[in-house]
Image 1 (cartoon, protein in one colour):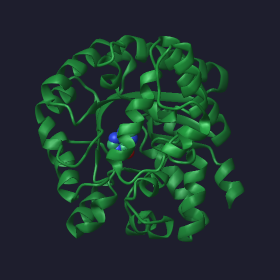
Image 2 (cartoon, rainbow, N blue to C red):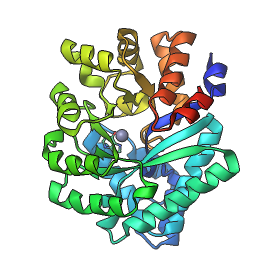
Image 3 (tube, rainbow, N blue to C red):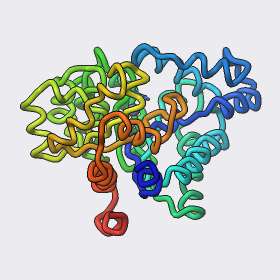
Amino acid sequence: MIELIKSLPKAELHLHIEGTLEPKLMLELAQRNSVEIPYTNIEDIQKAYEFTNLQSFLDIYYAGASVLLKEEDFYSLTWEYILKCVDNNIIHTEIFFDPQTHTKRGVSFYTALTGIKEALNDAKKEFGITSNIIVCFLRHLDQEECFKTLDEAIEYKRDIIGVGLDSSELGNPPSKFKELFNKARKEGFKIVAHAGEEADVSYIQEALDILKVQRVDHGVQAMHSKALMQRLKEEQIPLTVCPNSNIELKVFENYKKHNIKELLDFGLNVTVNSDDPAYFKGYLNQNYINIYENLKLSKEDIVKLVKNSFNSAFIDKALKKEYL
Ligand code: HPA
Ligand code: ZN
């Protein structure tokens, strides 16, 4: 089964490019760019990756991103992830990037986007890997600030398929960004949002009803509402579940307590993703392997999860058919 997991071509739909920054590259970029970080070696960095919840991770994740300054840094970051895609047999990937993490440090939207985009273009040329870019708004910031980011996304629309919402969930419900997402929808962007990672089902309901999301990122708290589960099933709204992330951020105590198998058995459109693999001990195959080994997944379950990943991707019918 592990060989099957590794050999199946897969799509990844929930991946923060800043979350693929491996300790080695972090140290190299810190040196290259003369950025001070509180670590001198890889072991120090790895020791800092002991999280108690989402916020404890975000504090370290934003600090790590401070080494990314130039277009070539974003290129290196993205190219390293592409090499992991090759290893993991990921043939299509939809990556998030957080412009506000960079613009607040004086690194332009254009610089980050161009570095990422160039690497993705090369990935297509070199390996045939297809991709989409999704811009995420940081929900701990106010809506007004996010409008500036949306305006930049509109400027580079031909390179951006959609917009999402990430960062500190608790206390920052989707309804805070109603007007922002109304505008994004009118501009023709696909819409996703992190919801129901740590916060309750009302955040998932708001993401659906107010932001009108086409996919829910995480969404694992849906199990606390029978009515919501029924709706997600009927409408087949994709959930981009991230098992390693949920364990590392203590959403579930351990893999045996993860609910992905229950969600799948109920008939929800569930996918498997790696979220921030450099921080959460493993890329996509490791996420599949961890749930397979702990939750008695069958071969049919694995194949269904993989098929769901292509069916839920923002790709046209012809490409979907080719991949399925
Ligand atoms: N949740 C919220 N924000 C994030 C995450 C996540 O899992 N990863 C990177 N930013
Ligand atoms: Zn995420």
